[in-house]
Every structure is written in structure tokens, then in C-alpha cells.
Amino acid sequence: VRVGGSLGIKLGADDHNEEHNRVMYGLGCGWRGVNTTNCDIDGMKGLGGKGLYIISSTFVDSVRTVLALYGTPEKDRPKSWVGAAGDGTSYIYVSPSPDKLQMMDSDPNLAFIQQSFDGDLVQGLKMVVGLLQGETKQILSTALNENQTLFSVHVVVVICLFYFLLFRRTVQLGFAEVLRARDFCIKMPIYILETTDVEIFLDFYRTDEDRENNEKDQEEMQMQEANGGGGNPALQSLALGQSLGIFKMPAATA
Image (tube, rainbow, N blue to C red; front, top):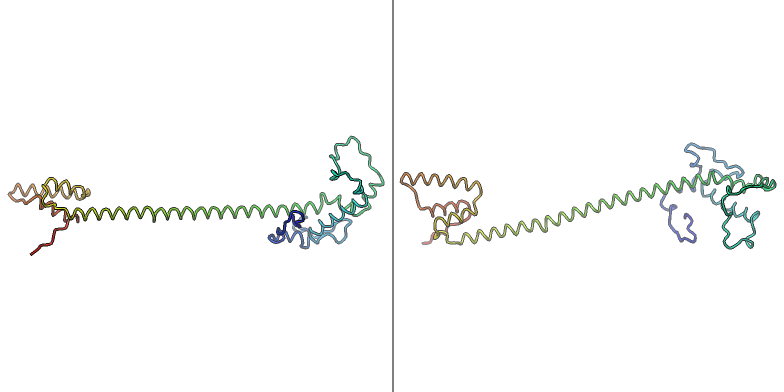
């Protein structure tokens, strides 16, 4: 994945992850421990402590060398050959060859390949995988936070549009209709209506407070009538409507 090759990968951890580059190309062997100073590899003098990339490249070269020296010739391999078939523990009896065992101990490439499966190569690759998985979690977490932020902005925009374009517009239209209704009522000849009709008309525009005040006024009017006073009820209702801001008296003409 790092090199790309037939997969066509041109950009990867080399360009985006400093921790990956430190493990792959930096000096030391952090996969052995934080405070480890001894990075020597048995049988491969000078290989340790130069980064995981050198170790992995040496491993690939060693495998190719061993296959060329001791493996089945490529022309004799079947087309489906991909290595040793089956599980080594499935054999009933294994007879070791002394000369082959001695060769594995004496050949540094074979020794390096054997120890790589639980040594620096595997430990280093596990460390790199852990770094890339951590980066993946960070990317997903960032994407989730950005998605939540985007959704929050969307909700705010929808609420603002609803409030300013729909709610406020509707309220403004309602106020405009109220003004039109008042203008219509102002132009109506209320003074020619009967007292009962005027009261019904005015009651539509009264608030609870206005009704309480009107009841008090009615009581005062009844008291005045009882004392021999009083006045024109229609004119009194008209005066009340004028005090409520519903009517405007026409200007006096010469």
C-alpha cells in the first residue's frame, strides 16, 4: 500500500502522517519500546535502528534470495503455486533433515526470515497499522463533528427562514389587515346606528380591561339617569369608540 505498484496508489501515509514516516524512515526501533536503545538484529549487522522501511526491504530481498537458492525452480512450479500448502501442524510425522537444519542456522537470510515473523518486522508493522487506525478514527471523528456542525447550521438557517420569511411576514400581513379593518370602521356612519347596534359593534374591539371600564361607565350612566342627568347613549358609545382609537370624528366644516 505504501509503495503503490499495481494498485496505482500515488499518495498515502508518506505524505500525510508524520508518525508513520518516523517509524518507517527515522532512526531507532520504537516498536521494541519507548526507551529502547539496542536495535541490533541477530545475523544482520548494521540493519537495526535505521527504520522499518530498511527492514521490510531487506526481508523482501532475503525471501527472493532464499527462493532462488533453495526453492523450487520457477519453471517447475505449478501455475497455482503460492507457497507451502496446508498447515504445518496437520502432518502426522515430520522428519527433519539435519543438513537443512544446519543450513538454516548458517544462512543469515534464512535466520532473518525466521525471526521476522515474531520480531522487528511484524512488531513494526503492527505499530504502523495502529498509527493508521488512529488516524482513521481521527478523520472519522472530524468528519462526524463537521457533519453535526453542518446540520446545526442547516437547522438555524431553516428556523431563520421560517421566522423571517413566514412567521414575521404573516404577522405583518395580519397587522395590515387590522389597519384596513380600522380604516373601514372609521369610515362607517356609526352615528346613524341604534344604540344596541353601536354597543355590539364596539364590543368586538373591546379588551377585557375595556369591558371592565365599560361596565363602570354603564353604572355611572345609570346613576346619572337616576339622578335626572344622562345624555345621548349613541354619542356616549361613539365617544368610547373614539377613546379606544377605533373611530375618528369628522372634522368640523364651516
